[in-house]
Length: 474
Image (cartoon, rainbow, N blue to C red; front, side, top):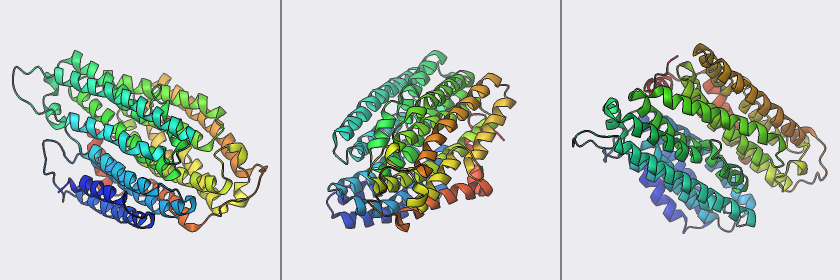
């Protein structure tokens, strides 16, 4: 039963809230292993939905589900040691809400009904908000309220977009389920005016949760204040789920013959997000906020690639996978930096190469990967997006794209170099690094390198099938 991917973490998460912290950590890892196994079974077609009017296995959905489940496993392994070092009194809340968060993200990946998808994305906000407030500081409270308020406004606009899509279904009294599968079959009959309006509101609404500019303002605060394992989940998994809502709207537009309109919208939001990230990343004082602006940039890259179409769409899907792997690794490494230095400020860190050699290796390699250097997969994905844009004759768009990439690398490299090699004013090591908190980061980076060199054929075919619905090709 496909719904087990939702029900198991949902029930275990509720139980974990009432268990001692150590037992909750064990449940976290066991559930992560079981969820990954079930996700693979769903990918292989061995799990079918019991509620086919609401859930379905789609290629783009299963891709997001696999990525979410994979990074969740290594984040859970990391959290066992991280939580032991931090000794947060509300750790049962972390264990429970993290599993509930997994349940809601799984629901997003499998949702086929227009409103069920909306409910699932809204549920991810409610389940992840307590994770941001876990440290219970003033700044954490501010970041949590900002996250909840901005994303709730965005999700309300997305609901309005859903209503507009329903209004486009002027079918003369013929009943049609409001599932994406059914809507794609009747897409040419949908009213183009209402459909365009619906897509705009879907992009603004789900784009708020995805971190697209100018709706991105919650993201730097939330990523900075959340515990590092939660930050890794927010950036490596949640943003993909929000993107899925935008992607399915774009699929519907393409099937209705309005692909040029939706593509132009995505390209515009993508480039704006990259430029905003390029401007703000220069003046960041905290390394977690720097990584947050990098996430805004990479969501912009994905939106841009999908909007360009053709080969660039394939590059965008590869980028989604590799960004999740590398950015999750970077946030886990940032957790080690925070434990070691006791500060999120870049000025309070330094000489990481000497003081924390294992963390330095993972962090610097992750920075190289997220910046698009080989042998990491983002090198391939960005190259394919650039080639695809030139094939489509988008000269001005790709010029802005490359300029933004250059500016972001220049700004981030200055900060990362300072953290890794500059002299530190206070070289005291508060918590020593260990392999339990560095191996998950290395494993995620190794996964990116492996998928860059060798992409398994079943995964390759899944990506091709996902992008074929919007005219993507290689």
